[in-house]
Image 1 (cartoon, rainbow, N blue to C red):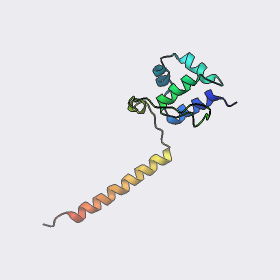
Image 2 (tube, one colour):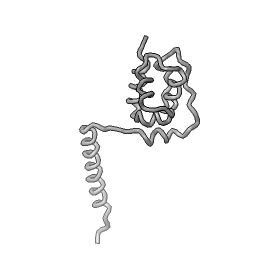
Image 3 (cartoon, one colour):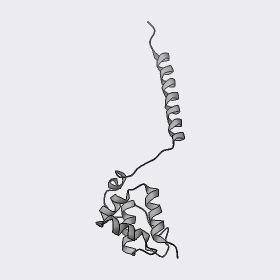
Image 4 (cartoon, rainbow, N blue to C red):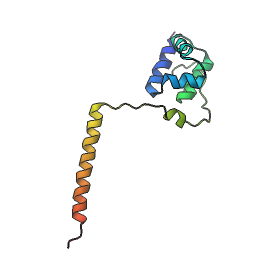
Length: 116
């Protein structure tokens, strides 16, 4: 049998949601949450609740689980806690692209200036 706790931990990391945010939303302490993720087969109810928090349907990972029906709670509560990490290479490319746009805009502005 797959280690469901490990898979849940991986999904949490993929979504970038902090563990503290999740265990607080679950209203359990850190130690209980860590034990939950250490178990091979966490309770179905907890899998569904975690899925609801990170907006992930764990029936994709565990076909024998029921499909997660997301609560109507505002997903921005999760987004506010999400951390996005960009590589240095990506950031250098973004800065390079912005510099190129800046040059093009500058050239366009020079062309559009009225002559006196």
